[in-house]
Amino acid sequence: MSEEAKLREDICTLAKSMFDRGLTCGASGNISARLSDGTLLVTPTGRAMGFLDPARLSHLDEEGRLISGDAATKEVPLHTAFYDTRTGTGAVVHLHSTHSVALSMLPEINPDNVLPPLTPYSIMRLGKVKLLPFFLPGDPNMGDAVRGLAGRRSAVLLANHGPVVAGKDLWAAVFAMEELEETAKLALLTRGCRPRALTADQVAAVVRDFDVRW
Image (cartoon, rainbow, N blue to C red; front, side, top):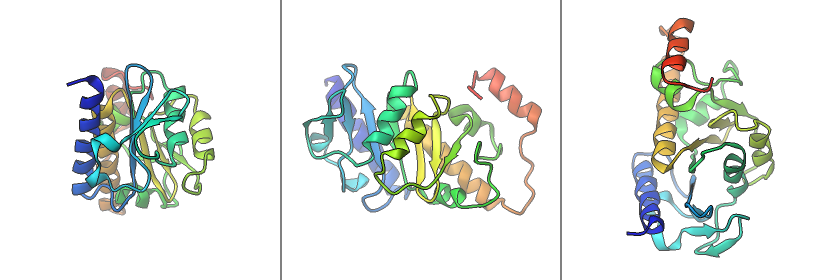
């Protein structure tokens, strides 16, 4: 199986997995992944992630022009902002996952780091997650906001909209996205319960031992 064929299959398999587990619903969410030639495979606009056809994924050239397949998601500028600014990005996942969206709406969250340090794994896989302001869906200014971070963050949370995560490859991006959603869920479940979060020294140890950009 060729690189492209394998990546097409993996995008559809992982998209269906997330859809089936309720991490995205309806026609929400989108995924992109970069091929070795620099072109992108992207989930099409208006398609449910649980029912994607590998042959109909959007194939975009390095300038974002459609080579083949259906029309790409309107969030392409959001994806390309990560590829253009964050070295080593191989895939980007954007969902409207419930707990992450809920967390984005709470007035007390830290906009520079929305996830409380409840487990080491969110730190290891995500680093600090930046809260970005609300934008209309498809607004190219979302991409501009990501570019303004100059590659310093692998994940952002769009206020009242959902998380966006970049990874070295498709599997890493999906695993990190799932960690973000699970940590947001933990944060909501323990809200008002005064949970014992990791101490500053414990966070520093995770950052040091796992070479996290913090």
